[in-house]
Image (cartoon, rainbow over all chains, first blue to last red):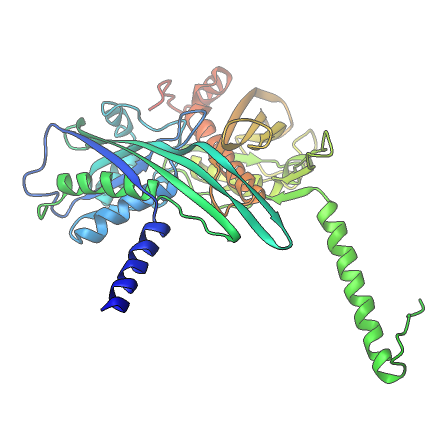
Length: 218
Length: 228
């Protein structure tokens, strides 16, 4: 009995030590949700890359796409790079439409119109934001005998997803997510990084809301 | 070269000697390579443009400065490192794919356009030049992105070299800092983004250049001044 308790205690301590805390918040505004999901149409998730000091990470865009596609197989999510290459040069940072009304002018190009029809794009989701390291403290000294010390730092994620309806050429929803987490690195001979999954939490938060919008099952 | 032998003389020492020499040579070579500049030969995939081709037969002339374009930046201090960014091959690859999609027919010329040259008959010849390339890595700026900026100059001439139009254009590419991404990989990705941006800028603005518009009208090609 005592051994069992001790094992449980060690397990709990292990879990507590190897995972750092993340707090997250999700806000959603949906104006015109599809009642029966998106059917056999497709959705494309793209990152905004027009800001000069940051850009939405491609791996975050891919994470959100995988979250949606893996939880409802009936939702077809077109890969970001596949879409950008198929519609080059119309969705590059310089040329990407900034407002839903800009789609109208894009569709005046016959090859673009045909390609979008072939891809069956019903919804376009723009992700804008980034994850930044906002602060750090502590010190660590390393020598041949190993490392000693303690370091800690914070990561902040802020993302906004804007949903465009391709048929109505209108914005139909917005999802905001923010997540903050503290990571630690204690070092007694060997440094042990305890990383807070901040970006992953933001991805799950935004993915869950998008899934609720796009899927008939959720 | 004489080999220093430890007390274990004979065949074993003879066998070890070339191995020690090889190991030392490899170490020295490694140190020399480690001291050299950061070299990036830009590599990427460039898609064809999704655009209605102009009914024009365009000749293209890539001179050596363009097709072997290399940017060298010498370290300013001991803490900095020198950089060599070779964009030539990627430039040729990107512009060949772009122009092939933008025009009904594209002919790669073997000779620079000029009077008396035996070039095939084309409507016009495009000669691109990379005038300037700048880069920035996070170590140089406080912004956590790798950046590449390029300035191009284009000449549109007839087969005998008579100028039709000349204009400049800039392009910009950046990529965020990411875990497990070396400076070289990040600079390569930023350069690929800058090349894609150059293609996007060219494709969407070519028909808006006044001298090009006049020439297209002369050729009977309808010109739209609006950009989607």
